[in-house]
Image 1 (cartoon, rainbow, N blue to C red):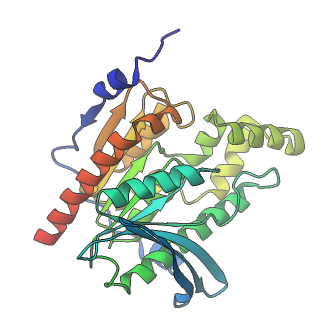
Image 2 (cartoon, helix red, strand yellow; image 1 turned 60 degrees about the horizontal axis):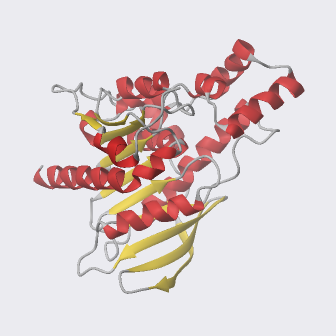
Length: 315
Protein backbone atom coordinates (compact mmCIF):
# COMPACT_ATOMS: atom_id res chain seq x y z
CA UNK A 1 0.00 0.00 0.00
CA UNK A 2 1.34 3.44 -0.94
CA UNK A 3 1.30 5.90 1.94
CA UNK A 4 0.89 9.63 1.52
CA UNK A 5 3.82 11.76 2.69
CA UNK A 6 3.47 14.26 5.51
CA UNK A 7 1.33 17.30 4.71
CA UNK A 8 4.25 19.71 4.03
CA UNK A 9 5.69 17.26 1.52
CA UNK A 10 2.26 16.66 0.00
CA UNK A 11 1.78 20.41 -0.50
CA UNK A 12 5.31 20.78 -1.87
CA UNK A 13 4.42 18.17 -4.48
CA UNK A 14 1.47 20.23 -5.80
CA UNK A 15 1.77 20.96 -9.50
CA UNK A 16 0.12 23.83 -11.36
CA UNK A 17 -0.43 23.07 -15.01
CA UNK A 18 -0.84 26.24 -17.08
CA UNK A 19 -3.73 26.71 -19.45
CA UNK A 20 -3.35 25.67 -23.06
CA UNK A 21 -1.20 28.31 -24.83
CA UNK A 22 -3.82 28.83 -27.54
CA UNK A 23 -7.17 28.17 -25.85
CA UNK A 24 -10.07 27.38 -28.08
CA UNK A 25 -12.72 30.11 -28.41
CA UNK A 26 -15.98 29.32 -26.61
CA UNK A 27 -19.06 28.41 -28.57
CA UNK A 28 -22.00 30.82 -28.29
CA UNK A 29 -24.64 29.61 -25.88
CA UNK A 30 -27.69 28.53 -27.91
CA UNK A 31 -30.54 30.98 -27.51
CA UNK A 32 -32.98 28.21 -26.60
CA UNK A 33 -30.64 27.11 -23.79
CA UNK A 34 -30.31 30.66 -22.47
CA UNK A 35 -34.09 31.06 -22.50
CA UNK A 36 -34.61 27.76 -20.69
CA UNK A 37 -32.46 28.95 -17.77
CA UNK A 38 -33.80 32.51 -17.60
CA UNK A 39 -35.48 33.68 -14.41
CA UNK A 40 -39.14 34.21 -15.21
CA UNK A 41 -39.84 36.85 -12.56
CA UNK A 42 -38.06 39.80 -10.94
CA UNK A 43 -35.91 39.03 -7.92
CA UNK A 44 -37.19 40.70 -4.77
CA UNK A 45 -35.67 41.01 -1.30
CA UNK A 46 -37.79 39.39 1.38
CA UNK A 47 -35.35 39.97 4.24
CA UNK A 48 -31.78 41.17 4.74
CA UNK A 49 -29.97 41.93 7.97
CA UNK A 50 -26.55 42.03 9.57
CA UNK A 51 -26.64 39.33 12.25
CA UNK A 52 -23.06 39.50 13.52
CA UNK A 53 -20.03 41.72 13.19
CA UNK A 54 -16.45 41.83 14.40
CA UNK A 55 -13.33 43.87 13.77
CA UNK A 56 -12.68 42.33 10.35
CA UNK A 57 -16.03 41.46 8.78
CA UNK A 58 -19.83 41.57 8.86
CA UNK A 59 -22.12 38.56 8.56
CA UNK A 60 -25.42 39.04 6.74
CA UNK A 61 -28.37 36.70 6.26
CA UNK A 62 -31.08 37.27 3.70
CA UNK A 63 -33.94 35.80 1.71
CA UNK A 64 -34.89 36.43 -1.92
CA UNK A 65 -38.03 35.53 -3.83
CA UNK A 66 -38.53 35.06 -7.56
CA UNK A 67 -41.99 33.84 -8.47
CA UNK A 68 -42.57 30.66 -6.47
CA UNK A 69 -38.88 30.25 -5.60
CA UNK A 70 -37.46 31.41 -2.28
CA UNK A 71 -33.70 31.39 -1.71
CA UNK A 72 -32.04 32.03 1.64
CA UNK A 73 -28.40 33.08 1.64
CA UNK A 74 -25.41 34.07 3.75
CA UNK A 75 -22.86 36.81 3.14
CA UNK A 76 -19.52 37.65 4.72
CA UNK A 77 -18.19 41.11 3.89
CA UNK A 78 -14.77 42.38 4.93
CA UNK A 79 -14.58 45.77 6.53
CA UNK A 80 -12.96 47.82 3.79
CA UNK A 81 -12.93 51.40 2.51
CA UNK A 82 -14.01 50.29 -0.96
CA UNK A 83 -16.54 47.70 -2.05
CA UNK A 84 -14.79 44.31 -2.54
CA UNK A 85 -15.25 41.81 -5.38
CA UNK A 86 -17.89 39.15 -4.79
CA UNK A 87 -17.17 35.42 -4.72
CA UNK A 88 -20.22 33.17 -4.94
CA UNK A 89 -19.37 29.96 -3.05
CA UNK A 90 -21.04 26.71 -4.10
CA UNK A 91 -21.12 23.92 -1.48
CA UNK A 92 -20.46 20.20 -1.50
CA UNK A 93 -23.13 17.48 -1.78
CA UNK A 94 -24.04 16.97 1.87
CA UNK A 95 -23.28 18.63 5.18
CA UNK A 96 -20.29 20.88 4.87
CA UNK A 97 -21.64 23.88 6.80
CA UNK A 98 -18.37 24.17 8.68
CA UNK A 99 -16.36 23.80 5.46
CA UNK A 100 -18.45 26.45 3.72
CA UNK A 101 -17.89 28.86 6.61
CA UNK A 102 -14.14 28.16 6.46
CA UNK A 103 -14.04 28.76 2.71
CA UNK A 104 -16.07 31.98 2.92
CA UNK A 105 -14.03 33.25 5.88
CA UNK A 106 -10.83 32.42 4.01
CA UNK A 107 -11.89 34.41 0.97
CA UNK A 108 -13.00 37.30 3.18
CA UNK A 109 -9.59 37.33 4.85
CA UNK A 110 -8.11 37.62 1.36
CA UNK A 111 -10.15 40.73 0.56
CA UNK A 112 -13.26 39.28 -1.08
CA UNK A 113 -16.91 39.31 -0.09
CA UNK A 114 -18.18 35.73 0.00
CA UNK A 115 -21.81 34.63 -0.34
CA UNK A 116 -23.51 31.26 -0.49
CA UNK A 117 -27.08 30.04 -0.92
CA UNK A 118 -28.65 27.40 1.30
CA UNK A 119 -29.35 24.09 -0.41
CA UNK A 120 -32.68 23.78 -2.19
CA UNK A 121 -33.18 20.27 -0.74
CA UNK A 122 -31.13 17.19 0.12
CA UNK A 123 -29.69 15.34 -2.88
CA UNK A 124 -29.67 11.58 -3.50
CA UNK A 125 -32.47 10.68 -1.11
CA UNK A 126 -33.74 7.14 -1.46
CA UNK A 127 -36.83 8.26 -3.38
CA UNK A 128 -35.00 10.45 -5.92
CA UNK A 129 -34.84 9.30 -9.52
CA UNK A 130 -33.14 10.93 -12.49
CA UNK A 131 -35.96 13.41 -13.11
CA UNK A 132 -35.96 14.56 -9.48
CA UNK A 133 -32.19 15.04 -9.54
CA UNK A 134 -32.49 17.10 -12.72
CA UNK A 135 -35.15 19.31 -11.10
CA UNK A 136 -32.96 19.78 -8.04
CA UNK A 137 -30.01 20.84 -10.22
CA UNK A 138 -32.19 23.29 -12.15
CA UNK A 139 -33.59 24.86 -8.98
CA UNK A 140 -30.10 25.14 -7.50
CA UNK A 141 -29.02 27.10 -10.57
CA UNK A 142 -32.05 29.39 -10.24
CA UNK A 143 -31.39 30.13 -6.58
CA UNK A 144 -27.78 31.05 -7.27
CA UNK A 145 -28.82 33.23 -10.21
CA UNK A 146 -31.25 35.01 -7.90
CA UNK A 147 -28.36 35.91 -5.62
CA UNK A 148 -26.31 37.17 -8.57
CA UNK A 149 -29.21 39.37 -9.76
CA UNK A 150 -29.53 40.87 -6.29
CA UNK A 151 -25.77 41.46 -6.06
CA UNK A 152 -25.85 43.42 -9.33
CA UNK A 153 -28.11 45.95 -7.63
CA UNK A 154 -25.77 46.50 -4.68
CA UNK A 155 -22.75 48.56 -5.82
CA UNK A 156 -22.55 49.77 -2.21
CA UNK A 157 -21.59 46.25 -1.15
CA UNK A 158 -19.71 44.79 -4.14
CA UNK A 159 -17.26 46.11 -6.71
CA UNK A 160 -19.07 46.57 -10.03
CA UNK A 161 -18.31 43.91 -12.63
CA UNK A 162 -16.07 41.88 -10.30
CA UNK A 163 -17.82 38.59 -9.62
CA UNK A 164 -16.37 35.10 -9.39
CA UNK A 165 -17.52 31.65 -8.32
CA UNK A 166 -15.81 29.05 -6.17
CA UNK A 167 -17.40 25.60 -6.40
CA UNK A 168 -16.30 22.52 -4.47
CA UNK A 169 -17.25 18.98 -5.51
CA UNK A 170 -20.97 19.16 -6.41
CA UNK A 171 -20.57 22.93 -6.26
CA UNK A 172 -18.01 22.61 -9.05
CA UNK A 173 -20.60 20.86 -11.22
CA UNK A 174 -23.09 23.68 -10.61
CA UNK A 175 -20.33 26.26 -11.11
CA UNK A 176 -19.44 24.99 -14.59
CA UNK A 177 -23.00 25.53 -15.78
CA UNK A 178 -23.18 28.95 -14.10
CA UNK A 179 -20.03 30.03 -15.95
CA UNK A 180 -21.73 29.09 -19.21
CA UNK A 181 -25.05 30.83 -18.59
CA UNK A 182 -23.75 33.85 -16.63
CA UNK A 183 -21.36 35.77 -18.94
CA UNK A 184 -20.95 38.47 -16.29
CA UNK A 185 -18.90 36.11 -14.10
CA UNK A 186 -15.24 37.02 -14.61
CA UNK A 187 -13.64 33.89 -13.13
CA UNK A 188 -14.44 30.49 -11.74
CA UNK A 189 -12.51 28.07 -9.55
CA UNK A 190 -13.89 24.54 -9.81
CA UNK A 191 -12.45 22.21 -7.18
CA UNK A 192 -12.72 18.41 -7.08
CA UNK A 193 -15.33 18.37 -9.84
CA UNK A 194 -15.89 16.31 -12.98
CA UNK A 195 -18.03 15.74 -16.03
CA UNK A 196 -20.50 13.04 -17.12
CA UNK A 197 -22.70 13.04 -14.02
CA UNK A 198 -24.59 9.88 -15.03
CA UNK A 199 -21.45 7.75 -15.20
CA UNK A 200 -19.93 9.53 -12.20
CA UNK A 201 -22.91 8.45 -10.07
CA UNK A 202 -22.14 4.86 -11.05
CA UNK A 203 -18.43 5.11 -10.23
CA UNK A 204 -18.16 7.43 -7.23
CA UNK A 205 -17.08 5.93 -3.89
CA UNK A 206 -18.82 8.69 -1.90
CA UNK A 207 -20.93 7.12 0.86
CA UNK A 208 -24.21 8.84 0.02
CA UNK A 209 -23.85 8.00 -3.67
CA UNK A 210 -23.12 4.35 -2.84
CA UNK A 211 -26.18 4.10 -0.59
CA UNK A 212 -28.34 5.69 -3.29
CA UNK A 213 -27.09 3.19 -5.89
CA UNK A 214 -27.84 0.31 -3.53
CA UNK A 215 -31.36 1.62 -2.97
CA UNK A 216 -32.00 1.96 -6.70
CA UNK A 217 -30.84 -1.62 -7.18
CA UNK A 218 -33.02 -2.95 -4.34
CA UNK A 219 -36.17 -0.91 -5.02
CA UNK A 220 -36.10 -0.43 -8.81
CA UNK A 221 -33.86 -3.26 -9.92
CA UNK A 222 -31.69 -0.70 -11.71
CA UNK A 223 -27.96 -1.31 -11.84
CA UNK A 224 -25.08 -0.69 -14.24
CA UNK A 225 -25.97 0.36 -17.76
CA UNK A 226 -29.72 0.26 -17.06
CA UNK A 227 -29.33 2.89 -14.34
CA UNK A 228 -26.95 4.93 -16.47
CA UNK A 229 -29.44 5.02 -19.36
CA UNK A 230 -32.11 6.37 -17.03
CA UNK A 231 -29.72 9.03 -15.75
CA UNK A 232 -28.50 9.93 -19.25
CA UNK A 233 -32.10 10.39 -20.33
CA UNK A 234 -32.94 12.74 -17.46
CA UNK A 235 -29.75 14.57 -16.43
CA UNK A 236 -29.42 17.15 -19.19
CA UNK A 237 -27.54 19.73 -17.09
CA UNK A 238 -24.13 18.06 -17.27
CA UNK A 239 -20.96 20.15 -16.78
CA UNK A 240 -19.11 18.47 -19.65
CA UNK A 241 -21.89 19.53 -22.03
CA UNK A 242 -21.57 23.17 -20.97
CA UNK A 243 -17.80 23.47 -20.87
CA UNK A 244 -17.64 24.38 -24.55
CA UNK A 245 -19.57 27.61 -23.83
CA UNK A 246 -17.07 28.83 -21.20
CA UNK A 247 -13.95 30.90 -22.06
CA UNK A 248 -10.98 28.76 -21.05
CA UNK A 249 -9.04 31.66 -19.55
CA UNK A 250 -11.77 32.27 -16.95
CA UNK A 251 -11.37 28.85 -15.33
CA UNK A 252 -9.07 27.45 -12.65
CA UNK A 253 -9.41 23.75 -11.77
CA UNK A 254 -8.24 21.90 -8.68
CA UNK A 255 -8.10 18.12 -8.52
CA UNK A 256 -6.70 15.50 -6.13
CA UNK A 257 -4.63 12.57 -7.32
CA UNK A 258 -6.15 10.11 -4.82
CA UNK A 259 -9.76 11.21 -5.35
CA UNK A 260 -12.15 8.24 -5.39
CA UNK A 261 -15.29 10.39 -5.14
CA UNK A 262 -14.61 12.14 -8.46
CA UNK A 263 -12.21 9.79 -10.27
CA UNK A 264 -9.49 11.16 -12.54
CA UNK A 265 -11.36 10.17 -15.72
CA UNK A 266 -14.25 12.50 -14.84
CA UNK A 267 -11.96 15.37 -13.91
CA UNK A 268 -10.21 15.01 -17.26
CA UNK A 269 -13.55 15.08 -19.10
CA UNK A 270 -14.35 18.40 -17.45
CA UNK A 271 -10.83 19.75 -18.09
CA UNK A 272 -11.04 18.82 -21.79
CA UNK A 273 -14.55 20.27 -22.20
CA UNK A 274 -13.34 23.59 -20.77
CA UNK A 275 -10.49 23.80 -23.27
CA UNK A 276 -7.72 22.59 -20.89
CA UNK A 277 -7.66 25.51 -18.41
CA UNK A 278 -5.12 26.11 -15.64
CA UNK A 279 -5.13 23.19 -13.24
CA UNK A 280 -3.77 22.68 -9.72
CA UNK A 281 -2.94 19.01 -9.09
CA UNK A 282 -2.72 17.67 -5.50
CA UNK A 283 -1.11 14.28 -6.19
CA UNK A 284 -1.03 12.90 -2.62
CA UNK A 285 -4.45 14.02 -1.42
CA UNK A 286 -7.97 12.67 -1.86
CA UNK A 287 -11.41 14.21 -2.10
CA UNK A 288 -11.76 14.84 1.63
CA UNK A 289 -8.10 15.07 2.65
CA UNK A 290 -7.77 17.94 0.15
CA UNK A 291 -9.27 20.05 2.97
CA UNK A 292 -5.85 19.83 4.62
CA UNK A 293 -4.56 22.01 1.80
CA UNK A 294 -7.40 24.54 2.05
CA UNK A 295 -5.19 27.55 2.76
CA UNK A 296 -2.89 26.76 -0.17
CA UNK A 297 -5.89 26.24 -2.46
CA UNK A 298 -7.51 29.52 -1.40
CA UNK A 299 -4.23 31.37 -1.91
CA UNK A 300 -4.04 30.06 -5.47
CA UNK A 301 -7.72 30.78 -6.12
CA UNK A 302 -7.50 34.33 -4.77
CA UNK A 303 -4.43 35.01 -6.92
CA UNK A 304 -6.22 33.70 -10.01
CA UNK A 305 -9.30 35.81 -9.30
CA UNK A 306 -7.13 38.91 -8.91
CA UNK A 307 -5.50 38.24 -12.27
CA UNK A 308 -8.84 37.80 -13.98
CA UNK A 309 -10.35 40.94 -12.45
CA UNK A 310 -7.30 42.94 -13.58
CA UNK A 311 -7.53 41.49 -17.09
CA UNK A 312 -11.25 42.22 -17.24
CA UNK A 313 -10.69 45.84 -16.12
CA UNK A 314 -8.02 46.31 -18.81
CA UNK A 315 -10.37 45.31 -21.64
